[in-house]
Image (cartoon, rainbow, N blue to C red; front, side):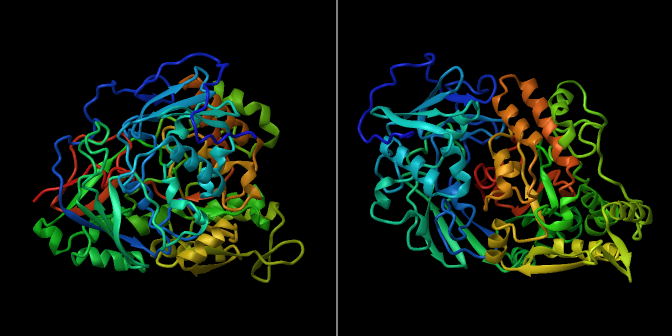
Length: 597
């Protein structure tokens, strides 16, 4: 068998490429910024007080407390609050990990294998020790039975073996420098909990036992989940944890939609909310609690890429397979007018997938290493990938006539003509499609309503298909939509997740995140290149080239950037003055916040 599961202590691999020394952390390129004797992460308050109770809000519901399986919907926060991995991430560096459950990490010079040594005091929340057997079981179970996001990595593991009382080694089948880091980020669960049980079927009846600072203490299906800080948490004194995980209790309340959630916050039922609309932030956050100073409005800058937010076109569906039609859809989307209507024009548009960072494609024709990477695929690339491509700009008026004329020219070239007031193809079929939306997504509903009016001027019929969270998740996983909302957070260290986002395998395989159904030999090759790059400049060139392929592919109609994090919170919630490079990510609030009267 390719993988060996050994419950006892295995012999060291006799033939090794080279010897390496254990270290306290690992970086994608170069060395970790923090020394082995670091006291705390640079963006925390190491002396933050412990205590306090806070309440957050989610929309929708939940029918599971197991965030590691495909079945069911679990509160997304559980993965981050209750479970840990061998290494933990610093959000002040592009991709650097430091020891958490593991006291050290060791790799081959070519990173063909990685070895971890567990901390002697690492414990599960029930007080039992974390063992190598738990680690191996977790990797194997998540890789074969867990959520799809865990399975791609397991397919690249050639062998996992115990190499000492507290050490485990993974060897890889492919040349990929990131795999050693990804290996350190798998959650570790307790093997004994699942003996004789079906891990894949667990829902509300079984809460996985983790090693994290918080444990679930109470819940009501679809209504709330309460987590309390474990007073016996094993890692409380680790430098990596110093100044973090400070609240005594965190509760998640569930609401039908964002409007109801916001009203609950205004009424004092919630401790904090994140706001993504700049105009709403300016105009609707002036209620009495804000005026009194009981609610504080905080803005958190960041240096991460914009990522991509907007409406994605499913190229598995008829008309959207033609790039000319997709360009026409972009032209018909009157961004300048919509942005002014929705945000008061306060938020800039996303210009590419990695915009707002050093990884973004440069305007104009590709040059240097970027051009060299793209040239072998010139015949299969979308127009503009090499020559240069920029999103169409409207004139800011409601009619947007010039862009609609250009859109019609492209639609005519693609075989669509207006017949009796409707746009039809050569076979007489009308151009009609639906946009799949979640219930409660009022903001995108308003955007789509404006868009539908513009499309009607081209003879195109757009209808909205609104479904609940469970139906939405099921249909998206099965690619059962024409167009739907799209959000991809992208980091300063893109890696193996790019295959899940854009890889050709996702065209047919259900459950990936390749919602647009793109199958690009260039994108596949560029992902391989960025994963194998040993120099930062080669890595950057590969990402910039990938950014060109994605953007020129015209798969998504981008909307506005979330260029700054906006958090409204009760005045008792505090955060450090020194902010991480990644700004307000899921590990910022609540991880480094504290409660202070």
